[in-house]
Image (tube, rainbow, N blue to C red):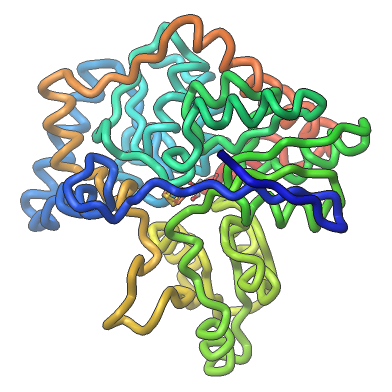
Length: 380
Ligand code: 13P
Ligand code: SF4
């Protein structure tokens, strides 16, 4: 069980063991994920696969919703077929509001589950049922429930990157696109917060808001690998470059950043900042959109552990990488890989998600700016 201690800032750090992702052969191991990533198709194969998928989407009256971290082919296909590429907040909104009865969610499992919870009567298909997330894996329901039981005085705020069962224990769900606003709102109401599972995102929000937050100790295995020492060296080579970072990155990385934001936030910063060179600390799947939207600008990947010879993650999520044209074509043709969530769980897990969606909609209206979708970028 966890050990805990109180710091001067009333933040309690709770240490949990992360599951062992390195165990070769385990269904959730990174090796298993990489082993399931197919070879890049040839140009002719790529075109044929895209045609097959587009035909299936039409036939099934389905829409493809993709995250910015999946393969560029899937991102392009989603847009070409009337679907969406976006961050996890906008994926949730779009899936809920779209008229299609079948949603095809290219991303990781929690994104498919969120779509199902918001639209229980729709069919949710994912290219890979085993595409998971280290944050989700590192926050098992029983331990998390016990943690909540120990702190009944706290408002439970969970990141979207969690299972449906963990969400069912929460008062609020947030994504990185709205976490700061939600926690500020709760702090203004005098609430003490129990936060899970990303400790870097939680620490960032705690520093920015000064809220009283009790943290779960999870990390994203991709963002956790960025190295400040190497980043400073890279910045010295490109003194005019601005650093853009996702808040799942460690605090030493965020301290060097010129802009911190969700995937959509990073895209907006790259569009709006005057600089022409950027070093980007997030999954390198975002490079596709960064480069296509900003053809005159240069984007460099922030360094992960070691140099290229020893690079452990190379800043790409193994589970996002499992999404492929080949896998999606096969699944659509065979009719498999639907996401099912227990009806009772749907009912309970929907509350924190609805709360977030209502809050962000109201906030956008109140600000009279940035509401809805920013063309080609996503939610404001
Ligand atoms: P965004 O909500 O910023 O798209 O992030 C989702 C995610 O999984 C980041 O690793
Ligand atoms: Fe999870 Fe990190 Fe992959 Fe996002 S990039 S899905 S947080 S493991």
